[in-house]
Length: 304
Image (tube, rainbow, N blue to C red; front, side):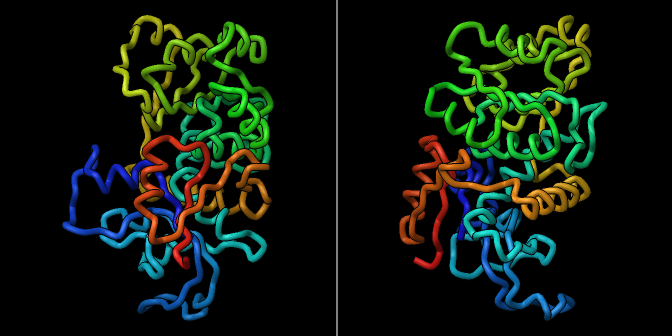
């Protein structure tokens, strides 16, 4: 099973990602069974069920194929009771969500049950793949989770994902509604569209709070009121998985794996992340679905 992310179609098209190879097999994330191992890798891993991340990062062979080759540490054991659809949906979204939740000045660097006790997390765009993972991981770690959405249908999905509070940012006074939930302010904002949401983020952020930005989906320029952010002691953390560093990625892999074992990262309509499936021959259609902002997780079944 192969998972499709926005960065996959961007890398294919060259949008913000310079092409390094004349031809690639796309996709960073996936799940499957180890067929063979290279020199120095435990032969006992053959037949092991695994989830993959960053398969096509810096190499031309990703997961949109029946077979792919990745470094051993990027093939992570997947519990027998966990489906390949869950495994293929981890990767970029889950590891990015972990990074977003572990960069606060006075917050934890690792996630586990209780690590975010007493914290309030705002997941911007809780119906998206990363927002969904933020909700699930933050709740697993003990945070009070608030999310913003743009429609009743997305509100239903965010609630199914586990958000304690769902706010439609297009209705009423979302800042007042969030402040009513968190009078002292939000500790961490996991932000998908900084240019659009910055004013709301700052209106609800507590002093010394953190805005973790992993995208700017609306493409709007970001303008900062320097004095306002000085007074707030705002911490802005811009993040992308590829340059987060090996230690941060390794910690994220370990914690996400623990959350998976605890059953904290389910996918599917009933868990707030509809699955949109395509056979391998329709990978181009899968890319079009992601590029057009389909709600849910797009998967490619490499066996069909």
